[in-house]
Length: 282
Image 1 (spheres, rainbow, N blue to C red):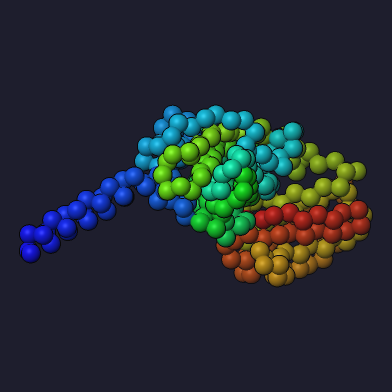
Image 2 (cartoon, one colour):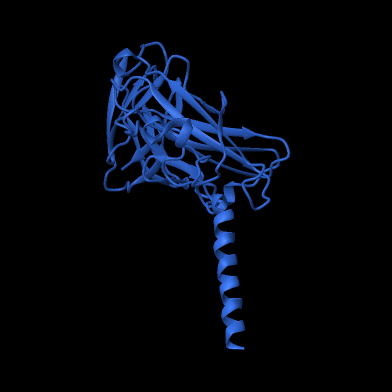
């Protein structure tokens, strides 16, 4: 009887090992591990996506236009916040995943990543955005977004790399598809010094900030109301500044005692001006 029990135990142990190895590609429903977005410093499309052997073990296919943004054709403005979106569409697939990162060829993060949907997405290893478990479901398509604060002036072109996975949820790698895509954005030339007197415009800088920041305004025709709201929509700072009637005026805002690290919205209103700018406080 003792020998039989030992043999059964051995068989069960062997089954556990086998099961673990065959489902290895599906152990990351809560997010892809770092270095799986296809960035050059991580191995590129050949070995640096979620299709690598340690993940879904399938060959990644290049595909254009899976990453989009609201950055204008003229380019990003240093310190300003934009929305980056990744979309995958594959008929008959019901499970999806992704990872995106803005980095240079040396692997350095470009700009600042801000998570706007904490239910579906998260940051791993400081420079990669990936899915959470709640962000994997879908019927033939799935979309994820996050905010990106553009880097300092002089950075130049920035490339967003992304890997996107579509699965049939059958418990194996069979039928899984992985795509790699990228988006390169240029640095714009419009800044505080380029603001036009007759064109309503608002620039918040530096961004990210430490609680103290400046608001450059052009085109305002009355006193300037500046309010700061936290991510939950609660007002945390408010002030009204006199209009100096200059073509462009720069307002110093020091709300450091009231702003902890996180995402905020700066509302600027005056006759001729109404704008909300996202601000990151580190």
